[in-house]
Length: 281
Image (cartoon, rainbow, N blue to C red):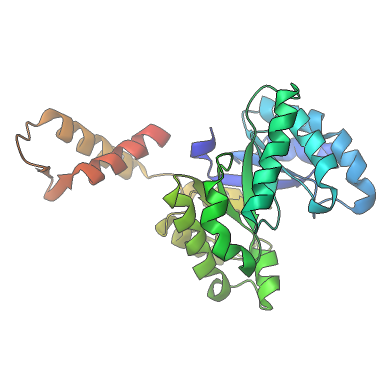
């Protein structure tokens, strides 16, 4: 499931009633937020309800991600691992040693039988200090990818969350994730500006172009935009089928490429086509 995530939708972890709607949404994954989305006095309530909330989301066929709070890391980690999420999102990730130690903490809970499946880690890039560490964060074996937090990153830069500020770090995040075969969820636009569908849509198209896998959302409007952009059109799927069929049917002899509908088709083109078919066909 992890490799095909496009849209990841945040929902506060302390309100079961507000979780029902995201569970019925078109998001590929729902992020149960124990950090910014929950008031300090409701953190305990959020942890206590995490198991029920995660079961509700999983029952709808969606992936479950839990964003923990760095100020309550061990308590959040105990509650998160116990509910068997697909991944734990780590806010303000900028230190590979800290992430590796967190991976060890998860492993210890897994060894104690706290849950059955392996829990992934999803570092959230939210500051310029994380940029030199992108490759090290992506290289952690438990990391399933890298995500980008537009609001906190722009705050750390002292500017508004516009593409001017966010484009380059998002591209760097995508490059680091790709270097290790991991997913990247990075949209160079304000996640808070969910009603600016045109601006968000343009940023999503840019993100797809520089190699992102999908993006983070706080509203169903954003889910629809991301899913549409990161899903190949029917024409693209048909073209991929044709490329793969032509490659498999022709005797290439000693040649490394074939001709297909006026294009040169070599192995990288075929592999891209197979990826489209494998994920979405």
